[in-house]
Length: 240
Length: 291
Image (cartoon, rainbow over all chains, first blue to last red; front, side):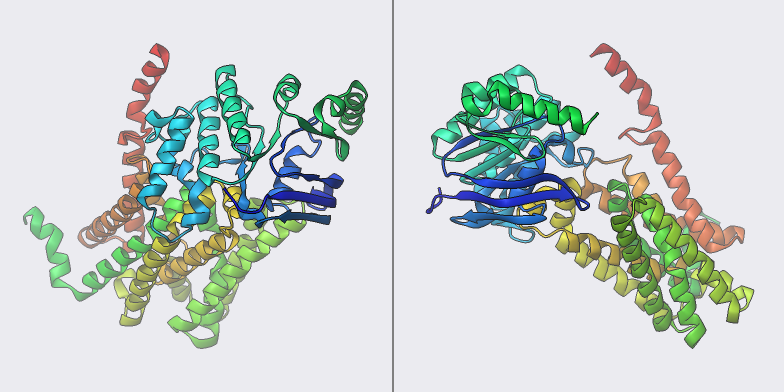
């Protein structure tokens, strides 16, 4: 694990696509070792926030500061829909991408990295499909594969974008248990989720978005009826 | 005449046949692997667009300094890359999608190119630029094609991992500090350079055939990109040899014969290929019914 604790600070940060802001003026801090759920209606800017923190999207205004090591300390589990799943690579190939920061485009993929990949696949219960093409995977297996790739990244901060979308409850339970274990090791977890019951059960902190921050704090008060109503009304207005 | 004689003697007897063979095979070895990535990235029409895009540059080079290989090459690369960049910029700044803006630019290029060639050259020159002179390759042209193929394979080997990662999950690659944008650009440069090198051999229009057809055929035989690449190159070489032989023995033009041979290879693969070929379709249907 890393030396200095990694915190993510947003100062009045806005993010958007093609010049249109999708998420306005977010200010706040993800503390090291925290476990935060990011929730909100469709189009609220949840994925946009994750991409902004990962640096895939530049802030249109304001700033994102990652203290204690920078972006190399962040591991990312993107939405499965953003991958080209028809591309002919194996499950192991996809998981091995997690070692990119250590191996890069030209260095040899050493035996210890391969072992790390196989270990990650065992952890998520996919050791027996390592050689299969990613286009043959079910939704649940795909999420497990992406989870394994995140494990191979071996970073102190984990950002997950809808890790339980399109998966069976069995897979969701497995991955949630793994996630709690990772948090228990002292890692910071930030996850975009839809299932509010799951959030209330497992996530001490919650960030509720609807185009901007509605509430950010401990889960019980962030997900109060009043806050949820604000988010719903925003969604109704935005998509009327 | 025995089969062995039928196959070997044209190349033993005539220097221009040997040159044609070397040129077409070198072109296949460089271009077909690029085609594999174009197919996998669903950019098959990109090769087509680029082949038209290089035309005005080639024609401008021809206008300025006659049949000078260097001038035509530089011109072709310049306009090819210009069209790729312009199409990208238009797609980013306007609501027009990239494929449409590409189509628009390459059609303009085609018109401009044909106009430029006809300004000075004869119809014969135009035919040479459009359809190549595979049976009349000089040393310079042969050298250009072989150097291009060598450089292409070396660069492709160097950026292979980046290219696969970029196709698979570009966002993740960028978040992992892998760059990405320049890989795409570098790949496009390789495509353009191969098309320009190939226009002497097969002509600007048909050189795309040796890039795409073997790659599309290889897709039906093996799964992984790493296997499709050598197979596509092999299909390209096979098409080159058989196309030249058909052209020689039946006295038909060489470059269309090579492309048609590659086309036959593709059609056979659609039907007989084990990876999704038509003959396997009934078995697949049965499997999905029973499972």
